[in-house]
Image 1 (cartoon, helix red, strand yellow):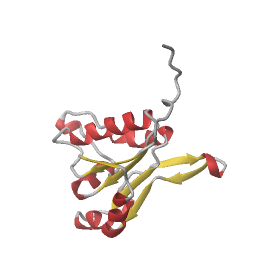
Image 2 (tube, rainbow, N blue to C red):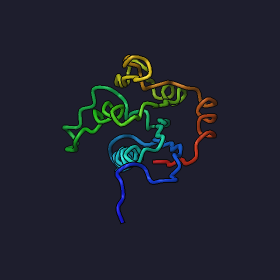
Image 3 (cartoon, helix red, strand yellow):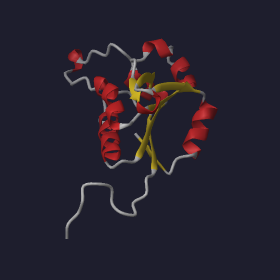
Image 4 (cartoon, rainbow, N blue to C red):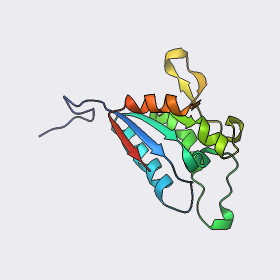
Length: 144
């Protein structure tokens, strides 16, 4: 049997939403989520990320993990655009409850091939109600 390297014949692209609710360090959840996101993207699924509750801290800029002795993986989020992962939804209420704003988050962008490779932001701050509507549109939701 010979298999080509493209998507499986008859395979269906699914919309996957990865919900990040936990702080970036202290547990394995945030790093595991990032790894699973990369797997979904590698299998050419439609991948979207949501950050709420303490998960909003995963996107903050200037993270320094030296004192806790673990590797800072937050820069990896900036590379996800290369894997067509360009939709990062951050819940506005979660930001506000933690004293954060969009300015406290990393600048994560992607190059839009449909718009002459114009650089565009991946992060969108949405209300809790808007995020619920986004969740309702997904085929699969995985929470970390």
